[in-house]
Amino acid sequence: MFFSEIEMQKIIKKGYKNITLEEEIAFNILNFIHCIYLNKQDFYSEPFDSQLFGNLEMTFKKNACCLIGHCRAIIKNQNRTIDYLFTENGFELMKDVIKGQN
Image (cartoon, rainbow, N blue to C red; front, side, top):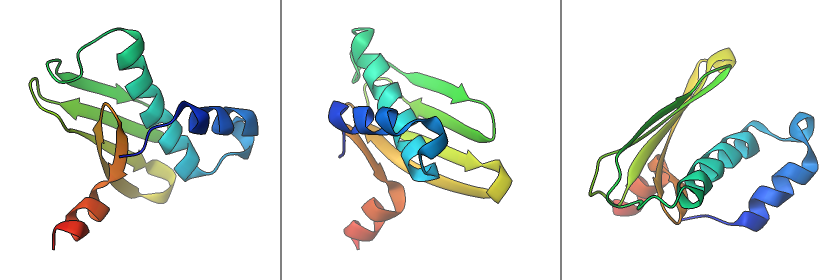
């Protein structure tokens, strides 16, 4: 899994107008994970069902007492969907995790 406050800072320093779509998605996921930490929530025991709206819609879902959550990024202007798995330690593309299981 991927998580780093340093990576978040790199994205912030680039400025919103200069980041790629992948960096924007990464920042949103990292920020969500970081907010859980800042709110002193227990990642494992808490359920999550959150949504961001806009041209880049994102959903974050995780059941209580589960180590892994699901994040879906919907890029409306490209009619594209990307799925991620996330934990308290970071995130990975779902397709990469599935490929690794074969």
